[in-house]
Structure formats: structure tokens, C-alpha cells
Image (cartoon, rainbow, N blue to C red; front, side, top):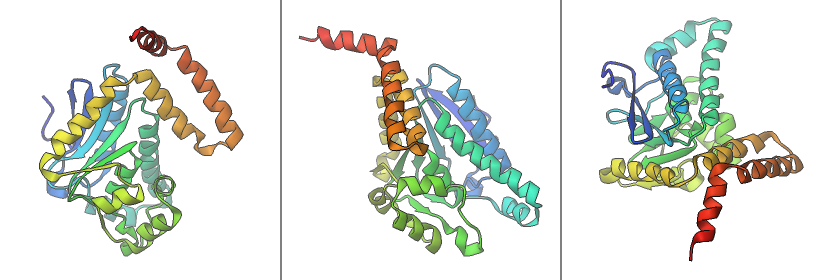
Amino acid sequence: MPDENKAVLCTNEAGIRRITLNRPEKRNALNDEVLAGITEALREADGDERTTAIVINGSGKDFCAGADLSALKNISEASVEENMENARSLVDLFLLIRKVRVPVVAAVSGRALAGGCGLASACDIVLASNSARFGYPEVKIGFVPAIVMAILRRNVSEKRAFELVTRGEEIGAEEAKQIGLVNRVFEDETFGQEVTAYVHRFEKTSKSAVSLTKSLLYQIDGLAFLEALETGAEVNVIARMSDDCRLGIARFLQKP
């Protein structure tokens, strides 16, 4: 049984690893303990061959409201070196999410704001309840959502990204879906069941193919067009030689 007093809980449900931010009284606000807990849980899940998908969600009413007050106070009083070290921890987490072999899914109910919205945006897939809210309000206190910018810019258009990070306003789940920040929106009443059903569908796909696809998708970000095609060809060959592909082709050819 997970320790209910921990800032981050981790459970395993038939191959689905669930990482729960567990500070409901603080709206699951981020601090060093939470960031370390998410990082540890992701690494542990990635090392478990049984894992087919990872779900990150929040306990209580909100997904995550961003940095907590003590973290903000520390930022305002820290040195350049200390602030850089702290910022790097978020960079490392976002990179880890992309390096994890299986899909990492953010299940957002309630509010995902500031760093919480950044955490959701950094995941491979974002599922939202109908009443969920998203936003980057950092500019209202003179801060910049700088670390997530590279990811946000890839999720939505340049103009929508500019609007989101410079006005600091919240948007609803349906609007977030329309602009590309969210993949699917489910009704509040059935959100938990819909998320579970969604992630369990990854059990019907090839783990090696999904892993190769995820790696290639992010790898081609920094490549020129020709390089991206060549890299795709290399991954194509690797996939062809995998056991999953050979068995899949054999089963397909045996169909009447």
C-alpha cells in the first residue's frame, strides 16, 4: 500500500502506472519534494517491463496549481546559482517524460495552472475533464513560463502560444482541445472511467512499436527534413526486425 502521507503516490494497475500528486490541501502545488517524487516514480515505471502507460493526475479538486508559496518565496530570495539549479530540475523532468519508453498521460481535472499546466503540456497526451481549466498566469507576478515554452510552441500555434503566455488568462477544456493543448475531453461524471479505458487501449498495441514511435517523434524535432527522413528509415528497419513486427505480420497473413 502506498504511504498516504507522501507528496507523490504511485500505484500499479495491471500495467498502468498511476502517479498521483498528493497535496490536495495545497491544490497539488509543486515543490522540490513533488518534483523529486514524480521523477523517481517515472524512472521506476520506465524500468518495469510490465508498464504499458503512465498516468499523472492530482488528488482532490485540482490537477496542479503551479509552484507553492514557499517555493515562490525561495525563488525570490535565491541566488543565480540556486535558481538555475532549481530551474534545471524542471528541465530534467520534462526531458525524462520524453525519454520514458511508454506513453505518459496527464489526466487533468480541476485546474492546471502555471507549472501545473507546464507539467500537463510536457506529457505525451493530455486528457481533460469537461470542467478542467488551463492557464499560464506567471506574467501576472512578473514571472515567465520559460521552461515549458519550447513544448508549448510545439503543441499550439505561435499566435495562440503568445496569447496564452502574455495574457495569463485561463481557458476551458474545450478551448484547450481546439488549440491543440488537450487531446480528449470527457464528462466530469465519467472522467475516471474514461481515462482508465483510454490508457488500457495501449495494451492492444506493440510496446516496442509505441516506444520507437515516441522516440522518433521527438527526435526529429531538431532535424532537417532530409535528416528526419533518413532517421525514419533507420527506425523503420529496426521495427521490421523486431519480434513484435514479425509476429504481427505472421498473424496478419494467417487471417482468412
